[in-house]
Image (cartoon, rainbow, N blue to C red; front, top):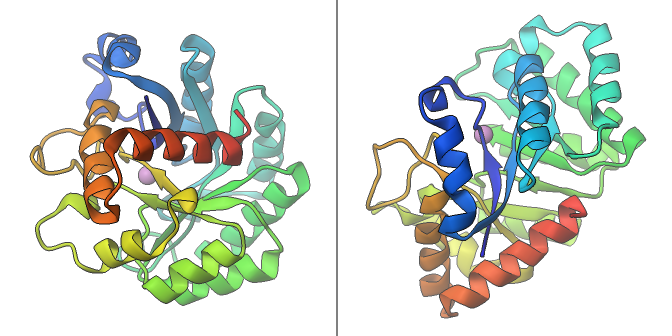
Length: 252
Ligand code: NI
């Protein structure tokens, strides 16, 4: 059974077949899905999906791309939403200095505020970090947050080990299956399996051999197979252990 720790089923690319696709997930051995929020609207949409499907849980939060439009009252709104039953994390939050779609000052400000919220409401965080590895780590360390996952990890082995030392999990997705993957393969090799979560980031980052197509949670098996190959474990052990890891982190 698979636990997809990060997917975006509120995304418009699922508008045409969302219901049929999600209904089929238990038949494809997908046992749990976390719908990761990208902005305020998707925080509400994730809650609606979690209300509808027993195997979907969700996070609430605002992605660094979208924080430029945030206002103080939105944090109050997130606090209120975080009290809902199936809201299991604050995210995805962080820094993205690759696209820089929000000014860096705003990214830092709202990242810190959402981390403070997570500490206050005692929920783990789902972190997005691109081209900002060290700064993301420093802000997390200063915040005092102790539980979370670095989604689609793209940093060094050393940094991954620092996160593990703090009790964090490393999110591994389709990128690990790509032909040119090197750094992430090293990370998978070095990080204990007890600290790895598997994810699709659907509809994005579709694993080989379906790279380029729309991603969904049923393709998680290719990520699991790749991790099993790298760590010389069997597929079932990887899917079971990563499922237990995610249940421990998100308290499901
Ligand atoms: Ni994502």
